[in-house]
Image (cartoon, rainbow, N blue to C red):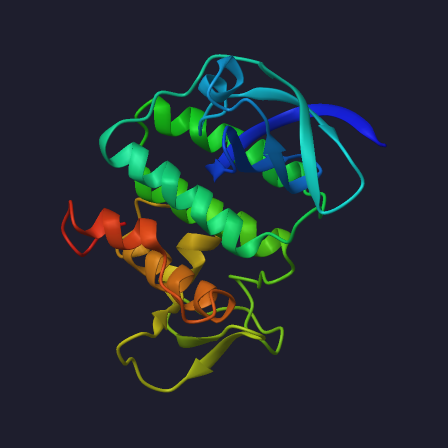
Length: 232
């Protein structure tokens, strides 16, 4: 039986049998699912989202067992919109990240994003940056400063996204398309540029859609009930 201890965050937990929980963890080794026994005790109080943990996983199969679980840092206390944003990140990660596929850079980015959410930094740049990192880590990323032929994006150009290929120049601006100046601002992470945040949200929605299988994100729908439709 394999045993390993590693940093982790809880993405989701649900009751399992009489006193256990079935928990999805994010670790540098990827997304792991494990049974946490005695979930109503001390371990259960720690096995909450946004708490840095050190977890020992045991077992060889897809469903592991939690051998040891300890706090490994200061919990990130998220409230209000930051809380809904954190739940969105967790659901998106569960839906897109394959089980047991190592992504240590994504783990570090996730941890940094939680810290930034807890510190009250503006939400939308954090959400868009995480969505982009997740897509890129999974091999679905694309250039923001080059079109699908390899030609530079022109500030005066109009482009549409082909999710499996990249950005394609088109002749006329229509709903759902992108101005070259917006794309170049995104390439530089210049969130202060006119239209950059709205374009980033639209771009990430289009890029994520093929990988979500047509099933809506529950956290996004819940989030939209507490704020205006123009934001996440």
